Image (cartoon, rainbow over all chains, first blue to last red; front, side, top):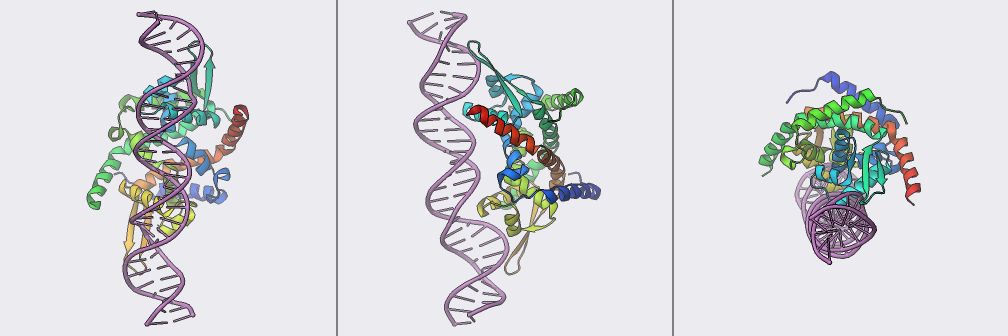
Length: 142
Length: 142
DNA sequence: AAAATTAGTTACTTTTAGTAACCTAGTTTT
DNA sequence: AAAACTAGGTTACTAAAAGTAACTAATTTT
């Protein structure tokens, strides 16, 4: 497990100070970006949807469903509506038969993707660490 | 709404290509960092807990409960156990009377916090955008 | 004429989240 | 000496969210 320098910790502390200074996390939904904005865009399915739409510029409903393995029609449909509503992606329907519906990230969505991808890279880099931690902990618990 | 350059999009696309190349997102929990690692550390309560433990180096159970406004004993207790289990934080119990239990981020937790804070900064910067998108969309829907 | 296609929706079940009362046990207040 | 308070939870119960599976529309293919 690689260590984090004190320098880096100080930097993060400064950022937090700045953030916590003008953000009141006690506020309920409306005023709090962490609770409101992130709650929608950081749930497990939304993350996968956004990542796939980052990788494949345009995807149709059933294509997303195949890629985001395990998601149900119902939940996919819900997530897509919310993500569209918050401006992360755009839905375009072509009135062909059968209908064709395409989803793609907006510029706003791409902006979010930029940050998300870093978090995902981190997760990819540290997955073994989490898994070994988890196994060790289960041993202690039992 | 500020735009994202094509250059930035290309960078992100490269990162995604690299990631998707050696990660199979179709895998269920064990092999997939996005589903497994992130599902735990990116739910709404965990994010808040980690951010507060970044701002306040050491917090006790009831202190976290006050700061992470609205969380219940049950869910806080569950989240803390999971976050401890995955190695993000450390729990130390002092057998005083009444007992004192302290939580603090591990170095691993700090490493995650570094990425998380960037996502949170993004959310803070773009909250107005999300809210205006949302209102506009609700108008269209109804 | 039956079957397949797309993008969902609906009714139902299971899992997860949230609420509120309770526990332990020593310490302070009455 | 009995009552109330403390910290850090747990427990039983209810509400909300997620997951399952069958169904819909209109048209084209078999």
